[in-house]
Length: 124
Image (cartoon, rainbow, N blue to C red; front, side):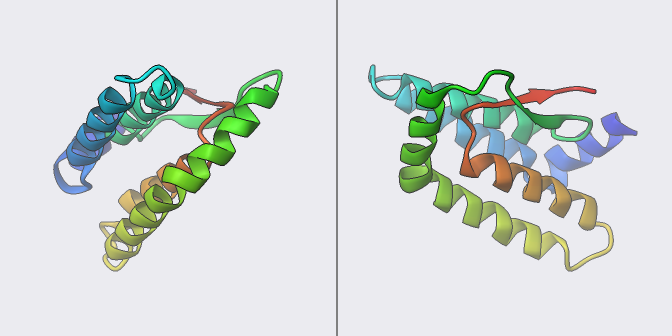
């Protein structure tokens, strides 16, 4: 079932476009030394954006205070805008009964986009 939902997500839920945007953003951020940690988070979001069904987001063990500071920078410069775009897509998809599972995945991505440092994506 996960495979079918992920395939439908890539085609109809915007998964390919979202993953491509995150990968391109991550590559641009990795061009600078300061942007590398933010680029790595973009790659994490790209992986989840491509195949979100069957994956959970958990807190990383042993919180890192540097991650908290980086989350603040992320939130101010990118997190709010990414969050709002995923919420907009979720609202658009939630209008139809078939789009509700895709809307739930956009909500999951939106919450991760607010503070990706200190989070792990795992397959249960």
